[in-house]
Structure formats: structure tokens, C-alpha cells
Amino acid sequence: MTTTASLLEPFVSRLLGHDPPVTIRFWDGSTLGHGDTTIAVRSPDAVRHLLWAPGELGLGRAYVSGLLDLEGDVYDFLRVRDTIAESRADADINLGWRGLVTLLPAARQLKVLGRRPPLPPEEARLTGRIHSKSRDAAAIRHHYDVSNDFYRIVLGETMTYSCAYFRTDDLSLDDAQAAKYELICRKLDLRPGMRLLDVGCGWGGMVLHAAQHHGVSAVGITLSPAQQERARKRVALAGLEDRIEVRVQDYRDIDDGPFDAISSIGMFEHVGLEMLKEYFTKLLSLLRPKGRLLNHAIARPDGEGGFDRGSFIDHYVFPDGELHEVGRVIAAMEDLGFEVRDVHSLREHYAKTLRAWVDNLRESWDECVALAGEGRARVWLLYMAASALNFEAGRTNIHQVLAVKPDGGDAGVPLTREAWV
Image (cartoon, rainbow, N blue to C red; front, side, top):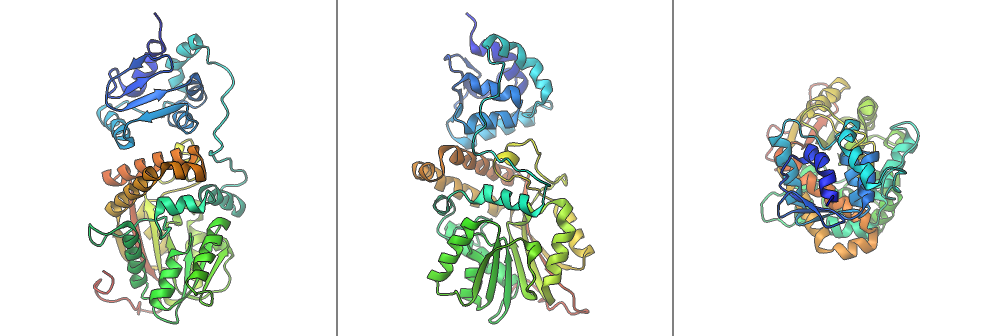
């Protein structure tokens, strides 16, 4: 008897090897492979998605749509993927159109050739010139205007969507996020009466901490109306409306400098390689002499930069996002007039942060689905779990780069790091 598994075996073998260490169960009950982790292919439409986008994107569309499920721990599934990639030199989940050679014969017999299934509504559909102001704003809204309450559950009460700083291993997520803000405030040498700009302020965590604990006046900017709304509410509850302003504004449009210090925490990934010169030139122009910039950003160690435009993460998580090798970032900062004074990797801290976010999502799965939809919850689970493993394996890094706007030879920076850590 011909089964779905027997028809698709050549394609699965090309993708995962001849004896994949994961069980794949198809809609007719037939299976391939073995393992505690099961991929349940629930509908022929999952194969249709692969026909239209062979590899990661097609699989992602099927998963977000609920046509394909992961039964078992998501980390176990992702580790199987990594093990296969490490053991097979020819392994590549992004098979490209050549992968159709092994898929088309089975597709004909399964009668799944034809129109592409509807794309999940969670997929980004941006238009216009990449990194134009309007397209950047649309990319930000896609990622952040999901549900403020969804983010509160996943990120914790600080609503901080960036790497925490676990000064001790037993810190809670919220305490580690407060420690991260304090670390940045100390690196920036914030003092009462100073004026701080936070570029990409999110839900206001940094400006609130800096105003409450260091007595500064602060301006936070975001491209997300939903973030601005929640940040302003938090500022009002803290009684800091006279010292904190939160705007929906592109960094290119800021015209009310100078500032004594600038923080950019988890925003740089949206800037883009072609915009590095404009970005750092703008921030330099907004600083007073001897003012400091703290740029906190994810980096790609291999130096290739960017996200593959056909990848799951580009279509569903960070549309138009780009990662840069830290050396390239430092060179750009120095070339444009900054003096770089400190580089601090927090790679292990981000892996720990992401695992905490995954735990929050899984523990409140039903509530998160009610707030943001099952497709969105699936996207966030998969990307955060995969990101945690990438940081643990060193495939991704994150750095805080501290730079100063020179004023002659006096940078005003302490001789040691003792005041910071």
C-alpha cells in the first residue's frame, strides 16, 4: 500500500537524512524516522506550502498556520535540527527550488499541485523602499503592535524586550532587567539634571529607571504607537510626566538636541547596513562634547550581516532586520567621529533571558493565545527558543558598545570599570 510517508521519503531524506532522529507523522497515520520528538503534518496543505517555498519559509508557514505541529519540547526539536546540520555537510533546510526535484513526484501523486494556500496573517507584507521612514515604521508596528498585555506576560513586569544582566545567577528576570538598566546608567555616568535620549525606548523601561534612580530628564522615542501608549501610562503612574517625554518619532527626525547621553537598547537591529553612517552621524550631532552613547545590539559573529530575506525570521519576526559584526560597527563609529571606550559581550545573558521569556509564554500559553492569536504565539515560541540556542552555541552574540563624543583629549571616562560593575 502506498502511503504518504513512502511517497515523501526521498524528500525527507534529502532534508533530514535517511534515518532522521525525529518522528514525522503524516495525516494518513504513516510515519518516517524515529525519536521522542514528533513533527505532526496535519494536512496536505503543509506540502503545498513547501512547494511554493521549499525549506525554512514553507515549513514556517505550515507551522504558523497549524498545518504542522511539534509534539514534544521545542528545544529538543531544534537540537535535532542542529545535530543534523553538524553531522551532514550537505544538510540545508533551505533547499531552494532544486529541492523541488525530490518533492514534485510525490506532490503529483498526493494531488497537492496547484494554488498556494493562504498565507498566515502574521506574515509581514511591507512595501516601499527598504529603510525608508514609512517602511521602517511599518516593520516596527508589525513586530511591536501585537498586544501590550501579551508582551507584559512574556517579558515580565518590566516589559523590557532586550537582554537582561544577571549579575548573580539567582536573579529573577525582572531584577536582571533592572540590573541591565543600572549598568547602562553607570556606563553613561548619568547624574541629576542631565538630559538623556533613549532611541527605541520600547515601553519606557530605560527612561523610567534613569529618571527614578539617577534624576535625569529623558526623551524616549519609538515608532510603535502601542508602545508609546503604554509607556506614557507607566510614566504617569510613576509621577514623572514633568521629566519624561515619550514620542512616536524616527531617530532621523530628532531636532531638539543636545543631550548629555544617548542609549540605544535593542533598536540597532532595525537600522540596516546602508543606514549606519546616517545613524551614527545623527546621534553624534545630538550629543554634547564628552557626551556618551551606549549602543546595545545583537551581532552576527560571521560578519555576513542581515537576515536572509527568504527566512522565517524576516517574514514573521523582524522584517528588514539586519545584524552586523561588532568590529564593523566599531569601525563605523570611529570613522564617523566617536571614540569607542568599551565593548562588553552579554551573550550568555541573552540566552538566559530568552529561556525565561519562553518559560513565561509556555506557562501562560492559553492567555497569550487569547491576547495575540495562536499563530503569533507559535511564531514567538519558535523564534525565541531558536534564538536561545543560537546564543548558547555562539552563533549569535550581543554587545554593549560605549562611545564618547571627543572634546580634545579629555574623554571624561574613568580609568577602570569599577564604577560600572
